[in-house]
Length: 380
Image (cartoon, rainbow, N blue to C red; front, side):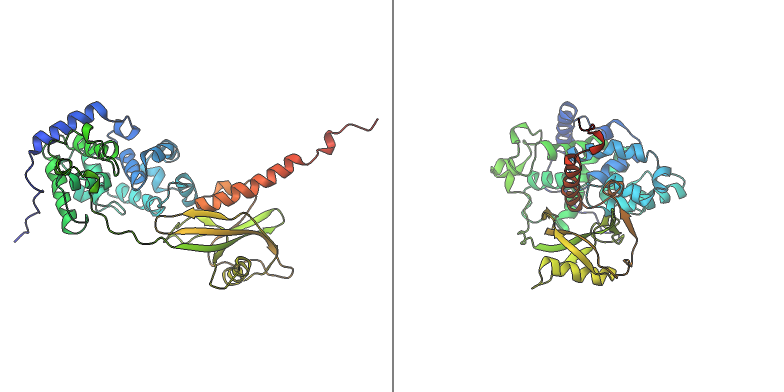
């Protein structure tokens, strides 16, 4: 016997409430490029970019990315370095790495599936993205559930538990009820817009909310209390040493493995500082283990600090050169020798870009301060 889907929370006049929400959206929606199209490709790219990324950040990347990869065919055949360079700075790089595989899958089947279930069969397209595509590109009554929508449901129905497990499935049921009550693409966009502009994590603007008449958290007077959050764990800090290993006017970069944190990006060789090690000692050890080389002429560069979602990193960068008699590096993954002018052709983590910004700015300033003797006239 087929298990019945969980019912939406509480009692809600869905048509009336969603009607009020859609009317509010028509008056208050931001003008965003992906809202001006029904092209599934352009909507897909926007939805992938928007995962865990703010709209203002995505707006800086969206147009440039589509200029570089304007079609499924272009994306399916994308050069990995060109793809990662187009994504550089957006973070969560696994999203980008999966795009060409999904594009090839869609082309091989002869076109886009038009249902949420069919779209979820594509590599890397999950339940949320599939629902967004099915509703916004194809007009299907497909629900969505992102962080904004979870927050709306948590407050509307005063959900006194962390949004996970059964609570999460109830939220999906709420979203399904919502898109059957009014125009699906408008409902889904309106729910996300409400969470982004009005039902915000802190200091929600309840006086502007079209759903305040139905919102139990508003009636309780503590809307910011929801959704219930897990206690935050302490954020660890990792100390790392990396080296710009120079060979004449070029330095070495290696490619990170495709899977894992920052997968597919280029990096400077180095690694974690172990207990009891100085940053210089850690660099020497890491370069022996990673590249089978020794280095000399080690000079410290300014320390770089960077925060990721679950940890912080303090990077100790150094200039250095291959020691006399040391073999050339033999990493177990691709490597390239880059110049101060060519590194920007590849995609690097944001923290590494900070190192380059300082290191090569200093070099440019030194070059600019050096007298141009050719421009000096003969002595009188």
